[in-house]
Length: 182
Image 1 (tube, rainbow, N blue to C red):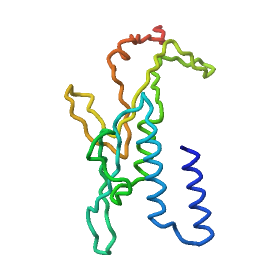
Image 2 (tube, rainbow, N blue to C red):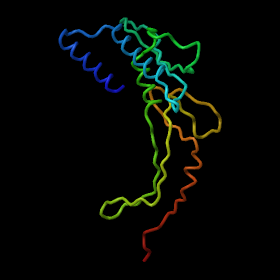
Image 3 (cartoon, one colour):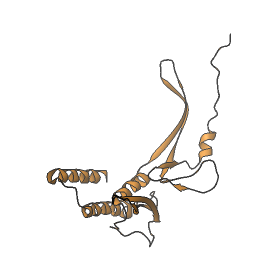
Image 4 (cartoon, rainbow, N blue to C red):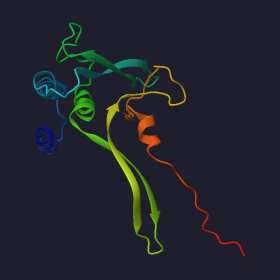
């Protein structure tokens, strides 16, 4: 998948250098819809989420100098939904949708929490550590409330820790006073 993206980028760059022109929007839509269809709709791994994420760009305003302002929304559908946007839908940013699904579904993330000390020589000594798989999300959940309320955070990506209390309860922090009193 990453090789296909790199090849497409090289093709577009060499095409632009030769002609001095950018690529046509239709060319880009064909490639990115093919990528989306191939890697997220057809090749579905058992551990992969059944959700598909679409980045929709809507016209938000037209300024005085006739430049368009776009509003970005992330739409989430189950893979088997009858309401999936059609491939090639011009309001979907297919390149962004491919990247978002790649980040959310094809990459694995691990968070590591450690209790460490640093020696006088600058070396770090790890006393205890815990690593846990985390999951990327285009939305965030407030940590100060127990509710299920979430807010879309795209283009920022947040990482969910399913059992936060279990991870933090493994550590008992002890403050040692290293100053000597005379």
